Length: 130
Image 1 (tube, rainbow, N blue to C red):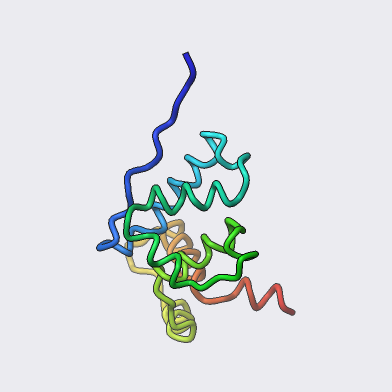
Image 2 (image 1 turned 30 degrees about the vertical axis):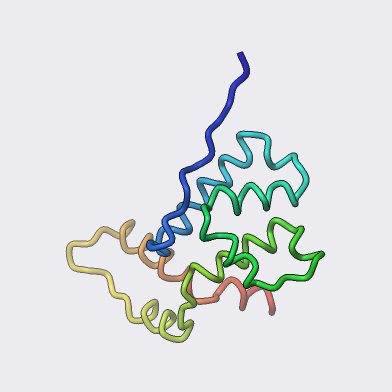
């Protein structure tokens, strides 16, 4: 008996906020099923098919070059940009810098909160470019 994994359920296009979780689940499926060893065009086709019928028109709207349309990471990044709202980096930095530890908040919870807030501040990109 051969082990078969079912792909994740179709993506609910009405809930864009759930995209990051959905694509993480698809990437786990991609790895566990062996899909990641297939050609990139097959991986992309499987991604678009698994997302559901609304994915095709969005994919075509990206107007990728023939070459880019065959690179899984490029296509995934385009979908990420489509579904994940761009954040205002200056606003995120302000939120980070004005975050204070609550009176009853543990140091660990405060530090975790700072780490979470820092993810959207562009600190890593700034450090890498220096």
